[in-house]
Image 1 (cartoon, rainbow, N blue to C red):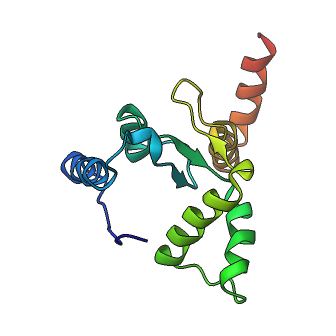
Image 2: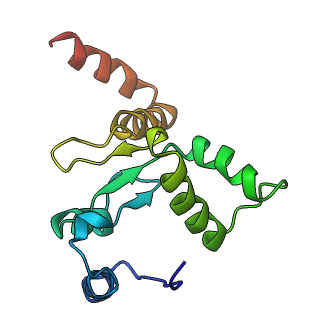
Image 3: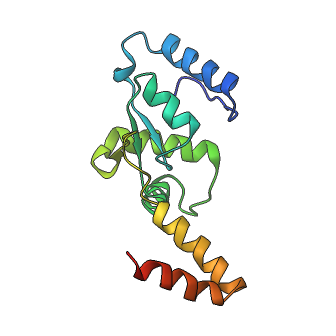
Length: 136
């Protein structure tokens, strides 16, 4: 580990992160791989647009990798960052390369949870949703 840094989710902080990464990696951005739990977001998109390859992993798989370093499996941002980086180094086959042209895979789950909330608040909404879906 070279340095531990925190980045806020705003344009100035993300730009500062990209500048720091470019200064730290003397080679091309493709020489540095980035690991993350989520395959989308401002930081992920900016990293990819800047030429850094980004890899995502299922949070459950990250939990299993976390057990290698802490038997209690305690969740901690610093430890998770280390576990992500080391796991990408040793087990890259467990990660998925993020592509900007693909919609995030959790979209259906999010939509499903949204619909569940709507239906719980208004059971009649389920009939409207089903009736609307029957037309397709």
